[in-house]
Image 1 (cartoon, rainbow, N blue to C red):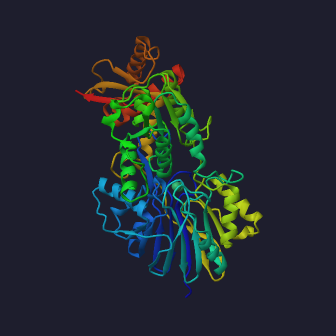
Image 2 (tube, helix red, strand yellow; image 1 turned 180 degrees about the horizontal axis):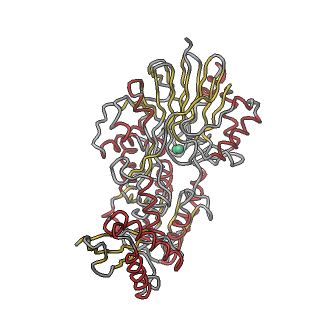
Image 3 (tube, rainbow, N blue to C red; image 1 turned 90 degrees about the horizontal axis):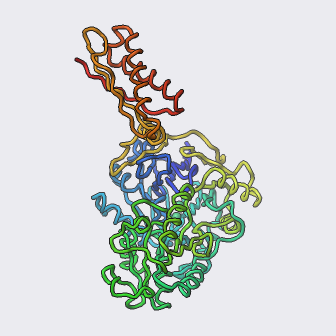
Length: 552
Ligand SMILES: [Zn+2]
Ligand SMILES: [Zn+2]
C-alpha cells in the first residue's frame, strides 16, 4: 500500500499571535514544527495563557521523531515546556532559539538534554523525513524556515518571515535555498499570512534607527524605550543610537534582562564599551545621559512600564522632560489598555511617542509583495496559508490564485484539519482532536471554559449570595434569609433592594412544598430562579446567584 503524507496544522490557522504548531506525518513517522502559546484576550479572565490541546500528539507519542523550532517567539515555542513534560523527543533549533528555550525549561525544572542546536543549512534526518533549516529574516534574530523532504516530495514551511534586505545583523535571507526548492520542485508551501492584507513591502528593521535618531536628538531628559523583550535587533539599535548620542543604557525588567544576557552570551548583541550599565548606577547619571529599556509596550499590568505609569516603580518616577517611546505595535485587543497607559504617562509630564506618531516600529512579517516573492521562489504545487486569522489566510490564498496556483490546489485549513497527499494528489480528509488548554499559574488545564464563563459573569454582573437557614424537620425557614452582594453599585445594593429580595425569598420559600425546602439542591435551584428573575427585572443584571444553606 502506498504511504500518504498528512499535514496537520494543530494550531495557528485560526488566530493571530498564537498556538502555532504543525504536525507532518508520513507512515509511522511524525515530526512537529513549533509549539506556541497564545496570550489570553480580555474575555479570558485570570488566565495567564493558552496552549494547544496535545491529544493528537500524546496519542501518537511513539511515532514522534522530533520537534523543530523556527524561532523563539512565544507563539512558536511557548508551549514547549508543557509538551516536553509529556513527551521525550529531541528538539532542534538555532542557537538563539534554544538559548531562549533553555531559560524557559529551567523555570519549569526541565532538563535541556534533548535540545539540539542546528545552523541554517543543517540537515537533520528524522525517520522518513529530512529537514533542512533555511535562514529567514524576522523580528527576532536567528529565525529559520524548514525544507522538509519525504519520499513523496518536498515541503517548504516558512515560519514567520519578512524579506529584509538590510538586516541589522547582516544575516541575509537564504534566497538561494528557497529557489533551489523551487527548481527541484516543491509539493507544498506553508507560508506566513500575518500581513497578507498589507500592500507593498514591509520596511527593513534598519528604518527604525532613523526614527530613534530623530527622537534621541531632541529628547531633553531621560528616554525610556519599551519594546518586546525578544526583539534583540531593536535592543541593539537602541544601544547603538544611545552610544551615538553619548547616553548610557540600563535594562530594566526580568524578561528583557534575561534575553539580553542570553543574546550577549551567544554573541547576538554587540556592545560599544561602557554603554550598558546597572540600575544602581542610574543615580550617578544626568537625565540627558539616560536610556532605560523596558518591556510593557502592551500595557501589561505587572510590567515595569505600567508600574512606572502608576507611580509604583521603586527606582523610576516620571518627571517633566522624560520621553517615553513605545517601540512596538499594539497587539489587537490591547488598544484600550495601551491608550490608558499613554494617557497616564502624559499626565505625569512625559512626552510619549508611539508608532502612530513616529516611525519607531516596523513589522516582522512579510507584506503582499514579499509573499509573492516567496511563492515565486518556491513555486509550489500546493499551497497552504498559515499563521493568521481566517481573513488573512483568504487574502493570502487570493495572492496565490493570482500567481496561477489553481484554486483546487490551495487549502484553507482549520486547526486539526488533515491535508492528505499521495501520488493521486492532495485533499482535505478528516480532522484530529484539537482545542485549547487554559493555563492559570503554572498548572496545565486547571481552568475550564466553564470557570471562565463564571469569571466573566462575576466581572460583569457581580454575585448574590442568599444565606438560608432551614428547619429541616418542618421544611421551612428557621430565620429570615440574609443576602450578601458583591460587584453591584451602591444604589443597586441599597438596603431597600436587599429588603425586597429578603421579602421575596421569604414569601417564595413559604409557598414551597415541604419536600422542596428540605432538599438542599431543589431549594438552591428555586432560590436561584426567584432571585435571578427579580434582579433581571429590577436592574437588568444577570449576576451569579450562589445560595448557601444551613440546616438546623
Ligand atoms: Zn508567529
Ligand atoms: Zn515570530
